[in-house]
Length: 156
Image 1 (cartoon, rainbow, N blue to C red):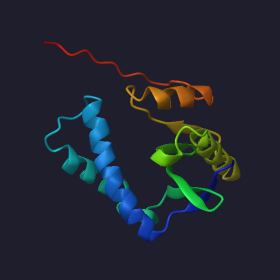
Image 2: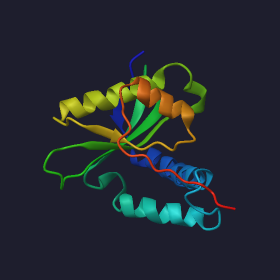
Image 3: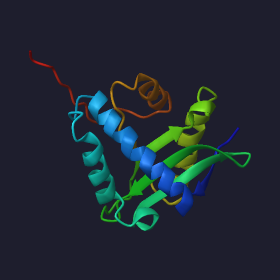
Image 4: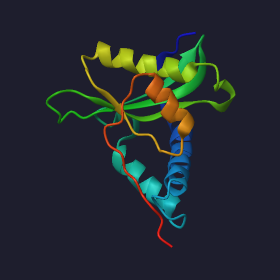
């Protein structure tokens, strides 16, 4: 069941953005990048810097993924207009919890690749938190390769 992309509406953007801020803060804390104290505020600041004009921010394309007209996920792509050779970064890709485990994550990745091909973009990149092993496996099986690896050791 292929996933089609539809530009996100302003109404849907409000709820997605609120959830994104909370989820990003949680991921940063869970990965050990940020302390829990102040993480939500920091996430909100970073998000506001990334999307100062919301859906109208240049270079950012935010979609809902649909299957038979039903929303199954969200995809946020960023194509930096300053790069001479166009490349796109997946800033957010998510499948709604009730739709997980059905192969829709791979379908949403395929939709992102098709969008890139339609826009003459030859490189699709993403970041994944190392503790998200399900996502890491999906991306590797879809042909993504590690380009940078950050490592840490807690010293006690």
